[in-house]
Length: 458
Image (tube, rainbow, N blue to C red; front, side):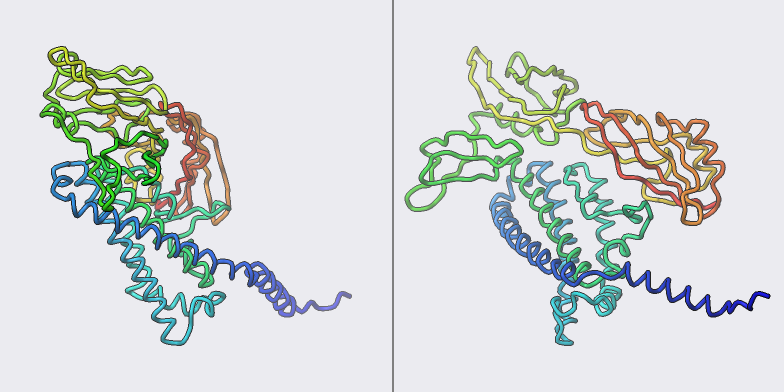
């Protein structure tokens, strides 16, 4: 006769085994965490150097504020600069708060790097992480709605989204993914990283504003009369004798001097930033000069252009560098006004969503999914009336009770019959993931956006 099994004993043994496995997984080598201290110090040093550049460009901006204020695009860039700086202050204030609280108990990052209790207590305060999170999401909305948004990738590098998929495809809340239930070394490092990204992005917008009035980030030497302009393509041009720094150390103004009203009009109406291959770009707007009679426009490699409603529209056939030359041909002058390099950039990454759904919401009903009928890509640049590309394929994955239960591959943007069947099988609290999204754009590139996640409400 078999002996009676001690069920409770086996339950206790099983529980202890589970706890042992959990501690094994959670165990992180001290050296691994300690190395984050060096990452933190590196980010701090880089931020200090970038803030010096921010201060210098701010000084130049303050000296040229009247001229910048007359340029609509420059004003737009500076408004974004100011908004980004507010986000920087909020992240920096949280770091200061952590340091102050550590100091009260004679602690530092070095002594707390392997712990998380005190760090979490601080960032969970009402004036802690929630302030930074709310502000960053607000900043992201502000940038996406701005007419003068630049392609800085700050949204994906921080990242800024409510739910983030880890490498296993499991969705995690923003604060949990980056900060919560992690040693101090990791959470603190993330704050320094975000602060550095905000500084770099602010600097990009400040330099973009200054570029509108002729300023370029440069390398200059008194001993070598060459000016090296820092750009995506580094161009080298001889500097005229009068442009070299004088013996008294005062730098001569290097801005181009307009010859007449025509030159001023051209400069004020010209747009050579944010040009993209494959779509129509406005090179000049609000023009009152006549191409072919007043000026001649030459773009090499050759690009077709047209003039409508006081706008000059160009469509670059491929990504790359082009040479723009404007020649004054009034009265047979045939005088080159100026010549510069411009770049046709690859298109920014599109935003992917279910058609008709609120792009900022990740909660949806089965009915809305079925009625939507398709996945769509959106790209709001240069007033494009339609999406400059197509969705080739994507994978739909149904997650039920935390496990993948069903998946299908859909070709094209319309939900095919197999996809519709999967949608019909969704239940409340299921998760639906759109993954392996493949998109072709008119600039000749193929994009694979990050997966998007929806929680089913009913």
